[in-house]
Length: 108
Length: 115
Image (tube, rainbow over all chains, first blue to last red):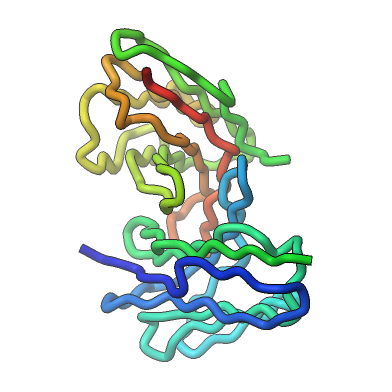
């Protein structure tokens, strides 16, 4: 069974702080996606990383795919209340496997 | 607004009822999915349809019956559910081919409560 473990599970921070979310697996994935889900809504794709070692930036969000394509990280700089939500990594094989999720709360 | 529309938004049903969840997309996507999400958990894959044919069934109990009448519509028929089936049911679609550049587009889900 392919598992994607995310850490931390929960994160509660003040506006302006930086944070990093990790997504780890013992399996190799052809690509990895990050989604954000807000209450009452479905997950929304943030980014897809494909190449080992790849770094992608989306405004204040920086995504990295591990060299061995088994892990990934999401770093948020100067978090804002609008960043609050459930962050899900998802590994791509013949189907999409979701990680265990990180619930982020950013207080003003 | 999401381009994947799910109805109803909320559904309460008894264990002897028969109901259906509906999902519609007009993006020309040829893969459609049903996911189940329990509170504070990630989505779990239930079914995948590719070109209107069932391609993946993740050992889902037969009280859940999917149907894909055409490339834009996906239904999930429910019968004799149990209280533990209460969850958010998410529909998603993706463009072909199923590869690393194929993001999933999710609807906002149907919140199902089984009493």
